[in-house]
Image (cartoon, rainbow over all chains, first blue to last red; front, side, top):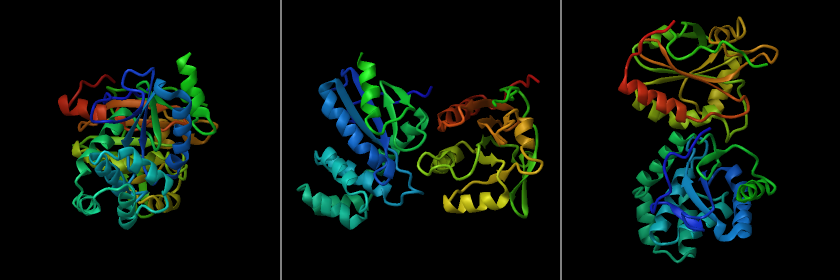
Length: 175
Length: 165
């Protein structure tokens, strides 16, 4: 069974509970992947139901050959993160998966009240390339086998996640 | 039906020659001198985002970092492989274990009698042609690349191993 090789750290983006939460859900995802788009509301549902019992961590795993805008979108979220708006951009991207070209990304930055000039400049010089690459590498060595790949409390979760299955799987681990 | 007699670490990897395209062949022996990753998989055209070959395509630069060559092997014919490879923009060869069907998979102990396809199996072979890692995944589960990377790391530390059989 594949295990998460890179522990959660302060460099990660955490939502909900903290690192001591009963459940830690790590998603390796790709903003342009339709399956990740379908997983997005499933994660939200689990977060709504489980509150601070669940710590959710998102790491980047852009499949660039299949999804040409995925890398740029991942870097955009990380740049927004440096402005303190990671999750706002993360949600924006999944809610607008059909438009992830550079112009659209700058529009989303504007909508989130970011300094668009700085945002666009960092995007064009790939300021967060290394950060995204590190996520990808940690995913690869942890046995990420497609997108999305979930790890629950450090173990790769190969089960169903649609139609509330993710929430049920998480709940069963609380008992 | 699952196969037994899967070749194990320490055994010499049997040589083979298969079509990589309609008019080109590839032999395992041609790749000697560097690590080789053999990824047997049941069939072309499995769903896109969970696809093992698409994943390995993204991991290719890391495999190359270890000097390793990756080849995919299934019982699909060359034209099927060509179309699949083109569709997914794969940058590594897919070999056709097509005639006699599954002959190479049988040599490695990863042919599924009855199903007529190969197991989802990984072999990492060192520069001397010795198997250093072998893994058969449940057929529906993409094994990912973690086992491959660990094996390549191990080969980097200990380039050769005593042959057991």
